[in-house]
Image 1 (tube, helix red, strand yellow):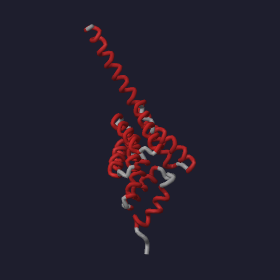
Image 2 (tube, one colour):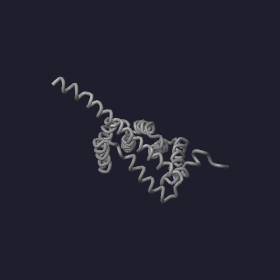
Image 3 (cartoon, helix red, strand yellow):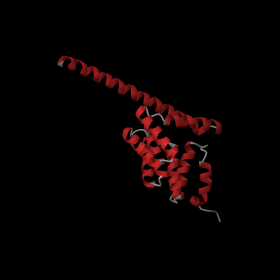
Image 4 (cartoon, helix red, strand yellow):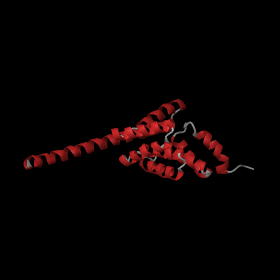
Amino acid sequence: MGTLKSILKPIVAAIALAMAIFCSSGAMADEAKLDELVGQLRDADPATAHRLDGEIQLEWSKSGSASADFLLKRGQDAIERGDIDAAIGHFTALVDHAPDFAEGWVSRAGAYYLADLLGPAVLDLESALAINPQHYEAIFGLGAIFEAIEKPVEAYAAYSQVKAIHPHHPDVTEALQRLEPLAKGQEL
């Protein structure tokens, strides 16, 4: 039995190494795809931007883990049912299980926002942006929180960052117009 263990140990190690290389190269390909989609989004016309936004959202939702995908779905279902506490529980399990999955942090931030827990929501959005600095929905979430706590200058800055990434974001132009007098002052 000792001989079998000594033979299997390097084989298992080699398989683990191959899986790590395979998984990381897949992640790099997804990251490259996202970078390409976001680059196209910046220059797209409104109809193309809408399509690209859908593709980007789909890519963001891919965790690479069936368990993480399950927790994301359970949290989303809880939000739809209006069970915010359950959603926070599912999303907390998700970020514990997959801390490098930005969408988990964004989703929990949304649930925290719905529960009026703005401090934890900001922390989660910051975690998401540390993983994916181009996550315009996370930046938009920060803008919404800044607006909710009556910090129009910060909200305007966040929404401006979203507009730079996604010029045709459905809510950004209106938010910028609404906040401009508060953020920049009114002309006399």
